[in-house]
Length: 635
Image (cartoon, rainbow, N blue to C red; front, top):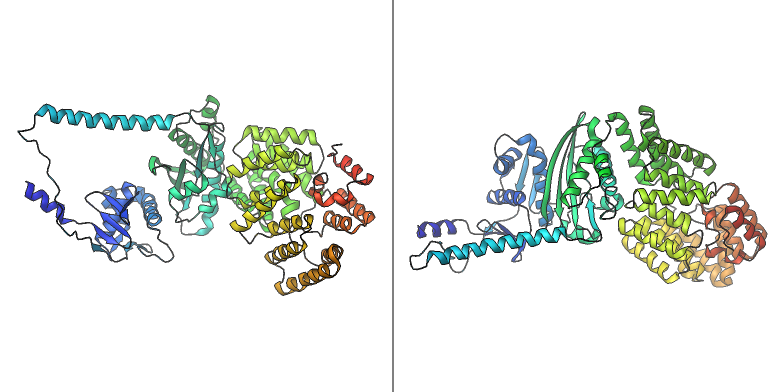
């Protein structure tokens, strides 16, 4: 017996490829001699691929090997997920694979060189058997001790999971689109966003959910769950895939515990598109259960009462979300058309009206739409959404934004902002807009910074929020923190025009004009202006500053604002022109420009009382009158 076990132990020595060893006996993958975490199914699949290295493994063969006969249709998505996990663990690139090659419409092939790991001395796997010289009570007591230890470990782990904590954090990674057409990505991303929204509203006190913007950064990533979790600071990750076929959709999801990458829960859903809202709520409810959240009766009722929905209306809504998330003029125009179509197909579709309200509220910023045109449409859509469903946080935020920036109805704005946060504390943009569209304009800077930090915690890799935090620090006159914040964003993504322009304005406030010129040059180039023209123009600004100091700098900026394209948040609008005239000492033209900005309801007019670039005008009675008319006068 012992001889046979020794033979079996030596039949399959570990194999090596690259820095990895794969050990069938210990069911283990190692990298540079250290164990690497890989779930059972992907590991079993990796054994199959490496044992037949160089050969094509069809999808049918792989499914049969891992899941058994007769389950190909059900296991196809799980196979794709397992391959993705293997690649992520091996740091393999789907574009230029080193290990696992996809053979289109066929299957997979392991393409790396594989060789056995030959030990210098034969390893004997001992055979355990009872010896007559060992008392049986000793053997059984040892077994009982082992069982007791195992039970203790399980109990301790359970206690760890159930241990009270201030707030657990969870990330929902973008669902993988298993359809061949990338134009179907909007469906995967839209359902991902809706699941995030459902989860975020279940128990905000105990469960925080990373926002869509940060989650989408990991679309098609090769990073491990461990690394993603560390970057986002989350304890759990929900990931999965989606496949659409006609009017049906299949979603496979799994909940992973970040600490040891254990799969806590796996589920597949096959739904008609009429029932997709209920599927999203089912996923959210199961995920909440998986992280040991106790839901209120109200949350339970909401999860089990999703209405059926017109698939065409829902499809239009998801396409609207796609345009909204682009934050471009073209994207906003697409979103308006799609959200309008959704409301036409279903006049009771509250989320679509809320989507319209969000787009119209920010259309003056991202789509150059006149506030006089956009704001009334935003108000109408927000009020319609709230008549249909008063619990929509985004509709309250959009309503608050317009009440403040357009109507200067600050009492209503504060009420709506606070209601938005009360309804969904996990929505980063509720905190974001409450910070910059209410607290900062009224000089409540420490509260504004606190709210902005909450937004950054919920959306940690959102460069939009990170960059705007620089403005929050600037308005609070925390210039060192503002400078560090803008520089941090430049490190995250050096190609964001508005961040360079904001940094240029800060340098101007600090009288660091050389640095301001450098940053404005980058802002203009990244905005798409002709590079040669930009360099020529900015060289003239630099020469003017060198010869005439700050006066020469602002005279050159005035010329640029009057004759060229303008980067985001540049000086070309009347609001920015007023700042330049203020620096040049021409107060009459400065106030004339501000009157135009007030008539146009420029959204930045609410920043009058806190923008340091208006310090040259602040002592003039006309400035105090403007603050009073905007409703932000604090003295």
